[in-house]
Amino acid sequence: MTSRTELYLLSVVVLTFEIANRYKRVLYSAIMKFKVLQENLRKTLWARIDEGGLTGLRLAELTGFKQAHISNFLNRKRGLSLEGMDKVLKVQKLSVLDLLDPEEVNKRASILPPSEDEFENALMVDEAIATEPLIMSMNVKEKLKYKKSFLQNLRSEMEGDRDGWERFVAIKVDGREGMSMYPRLLPGATVLVDRHYNSLKPYRKGEFNMYAVNKNGTCTVKYVEVAGNHLVLRPHNQAYPVEVLAMEDGKKVHDYLVGRVCYVGIET
Image (spheres, helix red, strand yellow):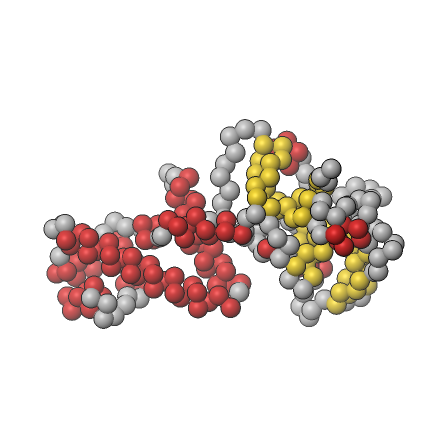
């Protein structure tokens, strides 16, 4: 059975490839991480050789590689392919988890620790981070607690590919955003966003949903309507202007809806 710690660590590997697939600008970083994993594998193998439990010749025999190939890898004269690393890991009974830097794991892990009481954790993040499917721990500003019974009773309404998104995130609205939705919001209000509700379907009959909307890579909180190929972002406070956001070719409404605001906390 996979342990909770292994799941926690495995999320880092998954997250690295998820980011590389979704954001090409960090592909170079992902490659550098692969080099780090190779270096950590070298260190592990050298430690076993120094302890007398392994030799380069024995490793070559186990993997089916030539001894020169293994020697060049151990002495940093060449790298290994993914298939080559798989063979070495298999014969040495290692996994990728054994090669990860614990400090990097803590920074990038995206699985929330399980709650032991009646409350569930939700991550407080900046507006720009709230638009990303997975939240890395280094981007978490605070962990807020909400009753499990409250969260479990919330209906989801997903459109598009949202299964892999962490469901709840919290953001703090700034002065202008808060006043544009006054009195439903106030400056500095904390809003809990259900990112598994990215549909325009009304949550309650006769009541407008309030959404966190992806506008230029960050979140704005507004009512949302559709006019042709445009999103109409309406404030609650009529003293503030209506905004019109043109949708990019190939994108749909649900791509812009980060999620429905399902709870508002106002500090007094």
